[in-house]
Image (cartoon, rainbow, N blue to C red):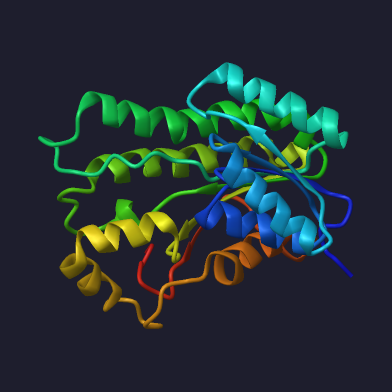
Length: 251
């Protein structure tokens, strides 16, 4: 039996990487999935993979930095599928660099695509999620680095998402909505690009993973998210969960 049968999910940044892995896993567990992102061709690729496995999905061109685009996205999902029970806020522009290197524009892009988009989309989806909803937001272990040099702007926007998650978990549980946040480490295009640009740093970082491997976007991250959104985790709410083979210690 598929645990998410009858449920509708919206995943942002679903055209590649972790977002795609989550979308594939949700669909494999029975959810009908709305795929949101800026690049239609990438969304089409994810949709085709889902349909080839017998699932149902459709793509929505959406730039999460613009509130009008988010509003249209939610309206399209509800119109197309007739409801919405799962929201995954995955899309994020990453402001990397030291304090002197990160520009106002880069930091603002990280803020508007991350915590501000998460804030807006949770509120837009709230009326539809009431009763039997699950929200999964994405943060990062960048906020837990003992040496934040070069990662403080990224860590800052991701930590803001964790606080929004906790707030929603406390305020909306009475409305039948569970909200959790994951901190994934996965073999995505973004991680591959980072490793190629900083090979020595990447090698040292990967060596600190107790399980000695980087996670798979679908098998390790996506399937966990599907479980988190199912009744198997119906009492899990307000938690920050690292999916990184034991690399981060949240304390």
